[in-house]
Every structure is written in structure tokens, then in C-alpha cells.
Length: 556
Image (cartoon, rainbow, N blue to C red; front, side, top):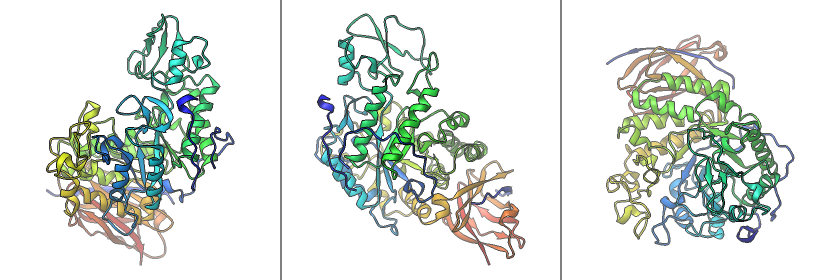
């Protein structure tokens, strides 16, 4: 309706292994809603999202093509080769096969999470046709494009809310929750959730703040409209999927404001309908509670995957402290609680202090964090700038600063004054400085992603986790029908000698195994180990401080 009437564009279209580890330490054009016919989450390992890495982009901060100080879609297009140049054998680009765009729909805020028009690109970022060009250019390089979808709330400036606010008999009145008195309840983190109307003596519900009134999924028309929105982005804008924002808060039930049965029902309808409409699409949800038991309630038949916040937190703690205990527990909990390949590892995102800031500027710690994250199953997500070690702490604007491309004016981001100032280290920490330096953080990420991409066991294989008596280490197997790869990680600051790994009988056969070295970081950080004649145990000669070792298990 009104400004939200969409402009149509025609479519183009393993076996489990248990490890026990010990060690010794040495010093079609349509605007109709999606079909509601049930569709299950695809279990095959050939789905593109089971075989890749996704790169999170804040368009406003990535690249400015029109010289207004704000990043835009054409700027992103000009930098696609940095993300993936389309050559799978090259390590000149990151090699990500997916980009997640933070909100690009019309909004009154810089971040875009308070939408005023779900059907059109924000003019600061370009046009709907620019988005079409982006998708075409991305697909040409083998990059899938998923967009941020904000189903929990709209902007208070959205025409639907404005109609409901000013007209008590508006058909949109029931699209939001109202109260003639202010309820006493507070939100999940103790915040105010009922906000005074500026028009009359009443209150409306918004879990985040008054500028983001929650949509009321108790009104069927709300789900129907939101399904029209996702249908439009799939069919007419050719998006490859969605990152669902703030999913725990979709439906309130009495005093329960998150993780309700109604929320699960709504997500189930979204997920099934999207998979029916676009079987090759991908949906991933933001559920930031680190409890695996709570996240487990969002499986098996709602969205395709969810961010593994508990694993992310544990990975960062292991890198920061050198103690792998919580990392080992987190990946064990994930492996036994969530469906295989349907939890996504990451380190930080646009709501959290950046990796290099959390780790106190320690490059070695940042490297081992990246190594651990990119060796795990599921589709890993990398927040733009982490691959060059960008810094940033709260407030949010300063963890979303412009990408640092070069030592040129404004870091190569824009020819104008940037919408937000660059970090103070931008003249020395940028893509151009790291591009041809084999030891750089950027090339560390490039090599890891390329290594992951070319080994089926890493890109879509199973996970079998080891136990260790050495607190700094983790070891696990990644297995596919094509190969089995042993991964060893040392989060500590000392070299570890003679890391002993016991392999379960399920790997045994009539011939012995041998270890084939595949990858080491640092490059001289692994002394090749030996495997016993009976195939039951492995002893790695040495693994460097904050090092990664990868070996393929092969039969003679």
C-alpha cells in the first residue's frame, strides 16, 4: 500500500569418531504471499550454504561509489572481487560464497533496523535496480546474497504504525499492541517495553525502544504481509535468503516475552513457506542466548540455521585466555544438541566489540581464533574488517566504522567526509598494506577459507570431538565420504610436544593409516606425527603456540 507497493522485477533465475587426547608440554513476478505448503530443511550436503563461508557487510561502511560519504550498493559491487573473484583456485580474494547485507530497506536510522518501507532499497544505498545489479554480479562470481530481514518490529515512522497511532479504527491498529494503562512488566533485560503514545493517553509495546514498535503476530494479516515481503525479495529482487533479526521476541504470551510457542509457530511458517517458494534459499536466525538448551527449541523445522553464540563466546575466551576448556565444551554441546551443519560459527558481529579489541591487539590470538572458527562445521560468518584486524568498541557506531582499504584519503572508503570517522589506526592497518604480505591477517583468512573450501571434510563434513588433559588444546576430526581430517589447535602461549590422540575403533581397517600433512599455522608450527600400526593412536611431534595443525588420515 502507498509507498510500500512493490515495483516488480522479473526473476532470473560420517561416521562418528571419538578422540581422546593427552599431551606433554615443553617450554516468477508476483507479489502474492509465499506458499504455506510444508517444506523440510534440506538434509543434503550439496546445499550451497552447507559448503561455504559468509561475509557480513554493513553497506553504509563498506565502499562509497557516489562520493556522498555513505557506502552504497554500487560501491559494494566495485569491491566484490575482494570477497570472491570467481576463481576457486585463487587465494587472491577471501573466497566467501555468501554475503549477508545488514538492512538495506528504507529506514530513518543509520543502521536500518527500524524499517519504514520493506519493499524498496534505502536511497542512501542506491536503487532497487542497483540491488539487481549487485545480485547479478555476485552470482557471476559464485556469491549468494542474503539480506537482513526485520520481522519483529517496524519503525515508529512506518506508515502502518502512523495510521494505527492516529486512527483508533485504522485497519492497522491491530498490527501493534496497545494498552490504555501502562503495564508494569519490563523486558528480558529489565528495560521499559511499554511506551507512551505521543497522540493520546495510551501505551504501545516495543521490546527494544519506542522507535521500534513490535508487530503483533496475533493478527493474521501481519504474518501475511511479512510473507509478502520475503516473497518479494525472493521472487522479484532475487535474494538468496535472509538473516532473521531478533527472532526470540516475535510473539509475547502473557508475561513471557521471548522464546514462546507462538514465536516457534511463526518461525515454522516462515521457514516452511520460504523453502517451498525457493528451495535453494537459506535462512539463519539471530538468537543470542548462549544456552544450547534454549537454542535447541528452534530446531528442527523452523529456520535452516542459527548463529552459535555460545560457541563464538567460548572461542573468543579460549583465544583470550589460552584455556580451551569452554571451547571444547561448547563445540561438544553444539555437536550433540543441534542438527549437523545447521549451527553457524562466528567470532563477533555488528553488535559486539571487534575481535582485535577484545583480544587486546594481540595478532597471534586473533589468528588462532580465526583458525578455530573456520575449522568448525556449519557456515562460518566473518564480520567485515575482522580479516584485517580492525578495532572497535561500543557505542555501536564505532564497531561499524568504514572499511579501511588503503592509506589514501579516508582510507579509500570515500572521496568525501565519511559518515563516521575511521579508526585511528587506519593509515597503517588496511587492505593494501596486507594484500601482498604473506604473514598478514588478511592472507591468514584467505588461506584458511581456501583450505576449507577445497576439502570436503572441512566444508561440509561431520564433527567428532576429542578430549584433552592439556587445557590449552583442542583436537577433533572432520569427516566426509571423501576424507577424514585431523585438526589440532593450541590456544596457549607455549609449544606443546607429543600431543597424543587416541582414535576409536571405527577408523580401523585391514591396513594402517598414515598422516598426510595438509596445513600448518604458523607454517613451521607443526612437527609431523606418527600413527600406530593398529590405527588406534596418533602422536603429533609438536604444535606451536597459538598454532593450527591439519592432517589427512590416509590408508597405505
